[in-house]
Length: 227
Ligand code: SF4
Image 1 (cartoon, rainbow, N blue to C red):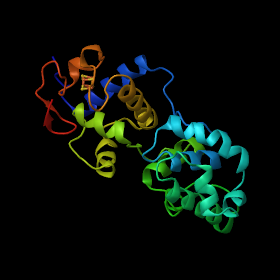
Image 2 (cartoon, rainbow, N blue to C red):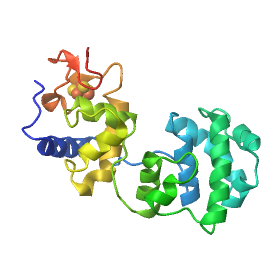
Image 3 (cartoon, helix red, strand yellow):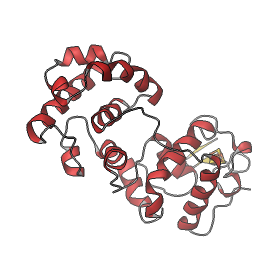
C-alpha cells in the first residue's frame, strides 16, 4: 500500500531517513578540485549527465586552470574542448563569459552570493545553489533538478510543477539541516530505483508511503498521467 504520512513534514522526514539508510554516501557526483572547476562542471551539467561531464572535464581542467584561461580563449576553442556536452556551442560561450566576469568583477575568485553567481552567464538559481553548497558551504535552498522534481511530486511532497516553485514549496517542509542531502538522496534514488519511465516500485523502500506506487496507484503524480 502506498499511503503517504499525515503531513508533508512527516512524509519528508520519512523519505530522508529511509533514503539515508539506502544511500549513506550520497553526495554530488561531479568531479572537481576547486570552486572554479565546480562552477564549470555544474554549468556543463545542465541537461547533460554527470558521467559525460566528468569524462569531458578530465581533459578540460588540465588545459584550463584559471579564470584567465577561460577569459582568454575563444568561444569556438572552448566549444571544441567540451565537444560531447549537450549544447556545447552555447556552453563554450558561457565558459568564456564566466572567465571574463570573474577576472573583471571578482578579483579572479568564484563569487559567494546568490545574486553575484546568478549574474554570471549560464548560471541560474539551481547552478548557483550547487556552487554555494559545495564550494562555499552556504546552504540557502534546495537544488531541484529533474530527479528532485519528479520524485517530490511522486511522493506527494509537492504539487508544484516548475523547479523554482517546487523549491519554495519544499523549503518549509524539509528540515533545513537536510536541504543539501535531500537533493542527493533523491537523485540517487531516482537513478537507482525511481526512474522516469519504469520505476521499480516493488523494490522501493518508500513503496508503503508513496501515493504513486505502481503496485496500487493508477496515476503517476509526477506527470499526472496514468501508469
Ligand atoms: S519507485 Fe515507485 S514506490 Fe518508489 S518512490 Fe518511485 S514511484 Fe514511489
